[in-house]
Length: 432
Image (cartoon, rainbow, N blue to C red; front, side, top):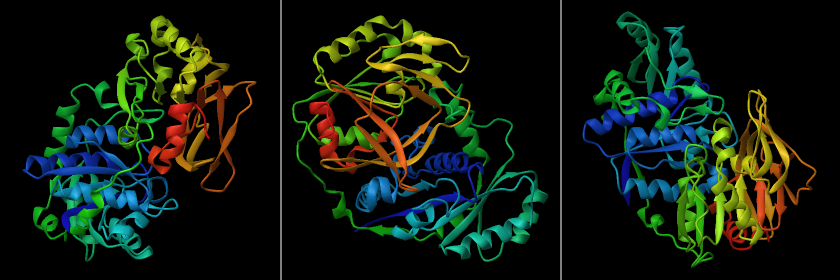
């Protein structure tokens, strides 16, 4: 058996500062000599990038449905053999979703830290904490109060909290982590991001006595031993990776490697062609809409994609990947840019969300789970070969298109939910 101090960091809603607090706490504890790993609840690419920068280690998703109970337990057990502290950032509010962050905490006996934005309240913080504690209930290990105005404000907050430690406070900040339409800005785009994270660590006032009273969680380390069939043995998979195509679960890369694949990375933004020895190509999601001019002018990359398609090399174009393999991509200013043209149709950016939520794709090998999150729409005459199903209500989700050995969709798949289906996509360019 192995153990670590594990906490789930949640709140009443999005926008309370969970990511800021989690990043600050990770940096704070590392500066004190502790080994720290961070996980993110639910599907997310951007928050984990910041949390990875703050902690210096890969950030994996934890979700009882998409990732699965057994894989969540395995990931936590593996991390517990390597570190002293595990921080799990929740998603939305503590009880939001099915499964919720509270469900995840209860599944592994993990205590909860509640982050609350106290900018417009004081003693009422205590009432909110009491409600969050009793509603589930959950084991509440402490409260972290964000955007505290002064020492007097902090004292008023403390007066309202009963029977739960005020674990930490973070003052109102002059600078914060910047955002855009899909969420936080990627860390490589933030000037002096490490200096900002260090400032957050210095400014969070952590009660170490209260922290040390949090009881470590014990996990079975034998669960860390896993192996599966080498479904992609000998395959070279080329993966687009740069600022335009950065939305990739690290667990997906591990799943490909565990299936026997060799991974090669290339940058469309740098006009790098698909490697000549690639047996399959993966164009993941990201922010291609911010780089239309560069991608449209990247002729070596575009020609190599057309050549791979003509040779029936399997291609998975996922969300942002699908946006660039269409004929054109119209940016937020309404300008249309020519793209690769493997999928007949036009992609247009919208001012509001066009797709969101957990979804599943039925295949001959089982259910491939994942999610959708996009601000663009595809207009095409192509007929989809499949549709995902929304987890929330069973309604039709995202279309899946197949053109020769190209699979294109807005659906982001979590590969280890069905490795056999993933292997068919990359070895055959098919869903069966």
